[in-house]
Length: 394
Ligand SMILES: NC(=O)c1ccc[n+]([C@@H]2O[C@H](COP(=O)([O-])OP(=O)(O)OC[C@H]3O[C@@H](n4cnc5c(N)ncnc54)[C@H](O)[C@@H]3O)[C@@H](O)[C@H]2O)c1
Image (cartoon, rainbow, N blue to C red; front, side):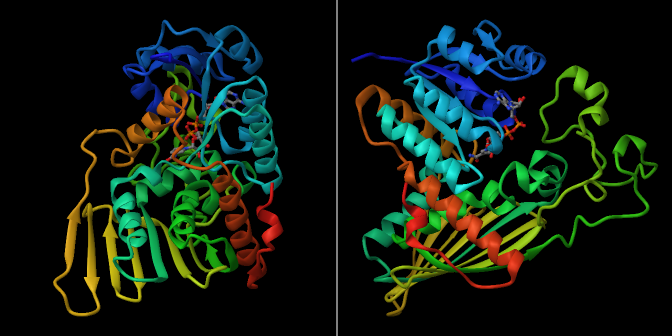
């Protein structure tokens, strides 16, 4: 059995950097090739991330052939996922594909069919499944600690500056991702789907853009704007730019005004879901909150579970009056997403080296895309959308 696997990374942006920091020193990985369509970004970021000696390619086919990885981490924008993932699987590579799997169900099926044919591992980037808090909640639910699960109330709030960053990046346009719910909250939909342990059947959603709205007093780009006191003025935060890009940010639209740009996504959204087994769920998204946090409340026949990513605690409240039970959950490994990234990557590498099962079954990517797209359809039409179980078929 090999002790290490050769891993290549495609897309050396924000997310690619998270993984490169972990891969550089990973005992089970030999970082063998990097790929990005931008040669300038590729060489500059590789240097910055201490991977300057790793072979670099700007074309995917050359990266696959000459770089010869056993496995590929795909961290390119969502609208490129289907093409990149299918090509890597067809070339016989194991794939860790960032979430969401792809903006449309058709693209997800293309990826799943390529995986089926190649018989290689395909792990979709739902690293929140490895979040210590989520794992504890899932254990409690599966162990029947709150009896039969009946309903869930989930929320994700982004701190206002984090929310603003999405208003000026490629995520600001639905055509690049399938909408903000799918782009950002596919994690939350996936976690709810796993806890419900059934397919979603009916969904209704409301949402809109109510905070990052046009402002006549500002210009289209921060560098053209006279409002120097604006707290959203672009200073390079939460964006990975090369030296040349940061000298002329407007040329690449990095310093778009978060109010006056050409976006079509929401900054707040609510949805209600009903699963095939009768479990019901509510989800709320907010991009202009004082602090970033996720909160989960689950109600069962014997009690409730509360979890909060800021408090890093899961508490069970029992309906029979028994003392509440609180568990503190931290990974302690220091990687992003409260340590989930490292656990998730370890599990992917372990699958390859030891033949264990992936942390996420690939079909979950399709389920999430179908769910988010149904929510978007409901939001835009104002009606309750019923999901045909056929839509979950590959
Ligand atoms: N799991 C998570 O929590 C998490 C967090 C952040 C981002 N993501 C996901 O990671 C992906 C990348 O997001 P990001 O924020 O890093 O974007 P980014 O724009 O910072 O980086 C993307 C990089 O991919 C390159 N690229 C674009 N098309 C390419 C192609 N066809 N082939 C090779 N390179 C290409 C770009 O030049 C850029 O350097 C997205 O799918 C996003 O949803 C996941």
